[in-house]
Image (cartoon, rainbow, N blue to C red; front, side, top):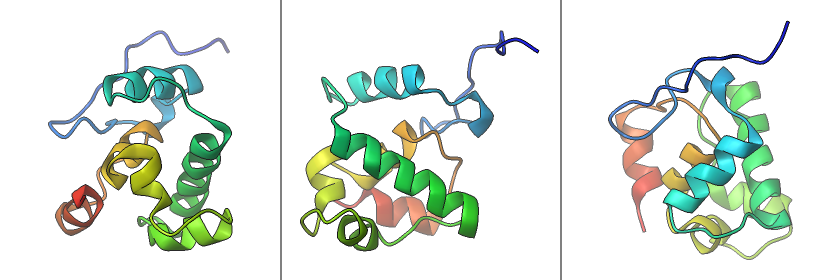
Amino acid sequence: MGQRLRHPEFDEYGLLKDPRDWSPALARELAGEAGIRELSDAHWAFIHSLQDYYREFHVPPPTARICHHLQLAHGCGHDLFATCLNAWRIAGLPDPGEEAKSYLSAE
């Protein structure tokens, strides 16, 4: 089967309604909309770590855990994406719930 022909749909928070619509090209587009000119290797590592953790546990990970795992400075999610919710959006993950969105939006 070929690539999906539909356009991705987003909820009112800018989160993908269907994470299967995510692609690296979409991630770059969403990053640009968030003011991130280019996704570095550190950005991609963080994105893939978010996706892997979510696939396994179905909840957002403690971002400090990802920073530690990637051997980056504490707070690397904020350094890379301004807010962890931006990282969540760019990673193409679904709505994590109100409490998690509040935590992920903190600056």
